[in-house]
Image 1 (spheres, rainbow, N blue to C red):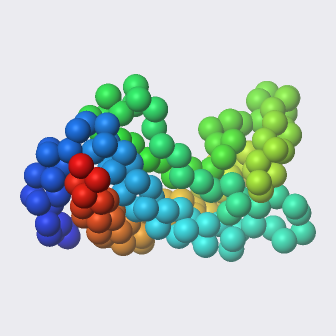
Image 2: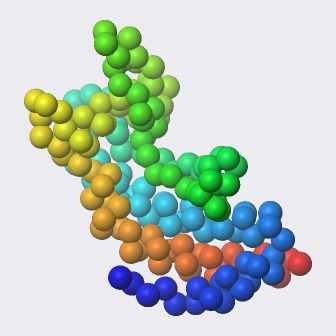
Length: 157
């Protein structure tokens, strides 16, 4: 496991900041780390996208922050990397098909079938390998951003 250097100093700086300002600095830093994973997932998804269709899973991969309720549950800011229109299936008779057509990459409800496979198709994951390969780089980006973001916020006070 990687050792995180400078974490004690960052924690000390965060404690000296007012809650809202510290939370905002943490969110910006987490987003920079999540963007590393998002970019890796997009690269993996581009290899799976069918060039003959207008849909693009890669264009629908996005970073989203958690809401305040989720932050309270988790004990701090949360960032998620996922596919827009994500956890929805076609329904029993396909009634949800087309519901995500307003997304940048079109209606890519089928991303889950590729990621996890089906009873008729082997999995061709793109999100999980992105996390596995880019996780260390994302952590490094988050820590580096956290140092600069806390310094910026402290300078404003």
